[in-house]
Image 1 (spheres, helix red, strand yellow):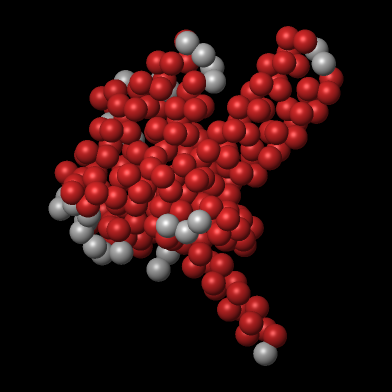
Image 2 (spheres, rainbow, N blue to C red):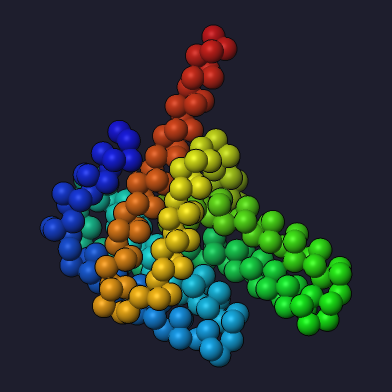
Length: 225
């Protein structure tokens, strides 16, 4: 089953599970609107807010969409019951990314104001690490939320899967990045329509990546026989 089949299956189940998707979308949109308004206060606050507030709420929608893709019902009570565990499991993934993003921001700001060349090197290293972490986090976040595995397993397994199927990972990352950029210019009413489709595409891609990894391993095993 490819990504198109997964998305088509979930689309058929949207209406029966619409209340859950609406609740999740409202919370994500409200959190994003609040975090977006903090940019005038400090350029670093949105980074922290996205990682610690917006993404955990979006991870709840991601978990719901993954449930829909498994042909299961996802009610509001289930979403609320799983939300505390979802938030904690999401933080296992987002906290390292937020820390590296803040280090990169501090290094870049220091280099611009002080002109110290070594800070430019720190910024380059942090930016490279941040890019790698962000790509792996595309798989790590849904894996952590659904499996409940410890942080070490989450990052190791996700890094392995991301390197075995880089194109879907890059596609999900690009879609999420463009959506985040566009969401910075949308009204709250329009923003309500964004979280559920993003979560659906992300969930479909997160299911497809392990499938491609297993297929690749199976083909290699057949080749060695």
